[in-house]
Length: 252
Image (tube, rainbow, N blue to C red):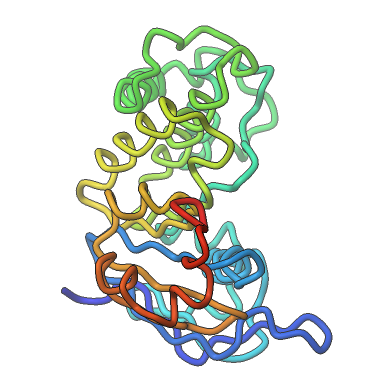
């Protein structure tokens, strides 16, 4: 398959510290590609670079062949690369459906208008309901987002991200802080929404990584340690030495 995202010698320094140190990798279109590694490996910094929240110190990022260096996060999102965050990024005191409609509005001419009536956004409701059905939240449409459980808030965040019609979805720790039941639900949901798009996943739960990912990149101290399938990565002695050995288990 063709690469949808490519980085070449990507580096990000903060003072004298290199959080990302010469990372070159390719993410194939239509796959779920996991980025894993110990705490401090550079995973979130790498996501921040891909999505335009921080600028590289050196190196290049290409999305569908277009260089992204110099583009900010909103421009990158409009190109089709959308990310979620470890911390919920929802409007807790809006209804579930209004959260999705706000995201849909951003794809229209409506945000440029100072005052919007309810009628102006009514036309967005069918698509908002469709997205809520996709993530299993149709029945909760009129609840305030603050009333949702943690796992359901993450599902809502997925719907908000999907409203942007991304070609590639960057998910940062989507199961962090969840119980076993919610982890299973979100994992299944990610598998469903991945159909027809590319997903890049930062995730500590290796059971989720094993179930979902076709390709895995392991970062350590800002560098690529190893890349391959889950079986290849799990058996690699460098990975075992880095953080999978010594009883680290499925949440290394």
